[in-house]
Image 1 (cartoon, helix red, strand yellow):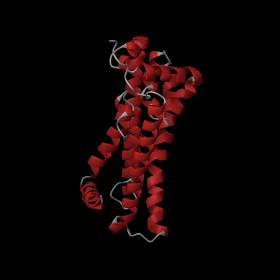
Image 2 (cartoon, one colour):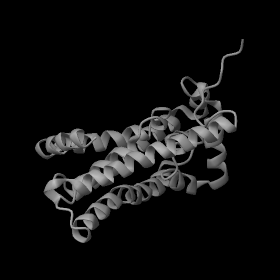
Image 3 (cartoon, one colour):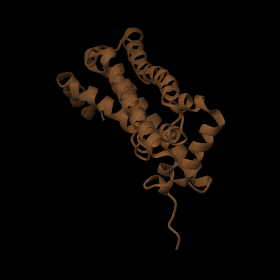
Length: 220
């Protein structure tokens, strides 16, 4: 892994715009129904945030890329739902995921406007709530009034932990920036945490006879 990370960090240093584009796409795809349940956007953002303290990436562009991707993704999903209304919830490909659509609708009905805020921090529900909010005819002004502040909190919540952790490792543990040790430790921790979380979710899904994004089986 170290032999892989060192060239990656060097590549990012030379092509920072690709890293910002990756952050943008990771946040964008997380807001796409079905795709957002599979793409590890949060893991990518958390991992790349480790490159801010050493100067490979800049904090403001990282935050801006993550926030812009999330806003475009959520906004597009909402507008698709708003224009199609409830028909979109029973159309392909959402028709293959009736369970998660029902859970998203129940989540929205329970929390109302706050569902848009809370969903931004709850994967994989966040990939379905914006389109559900639009399909249930939530007014655009109300949606964006809640969604944009949520994203402006979500982006720092995903970026700053890596920045602060790697900075602490360098400042207090004496790990020099140029040797990338702190970055390696953070990236390993993020990757390991993502694997553990994925295994935990898989175990829960298996014990409860299916998962949140399991497609319905065709009738025989």
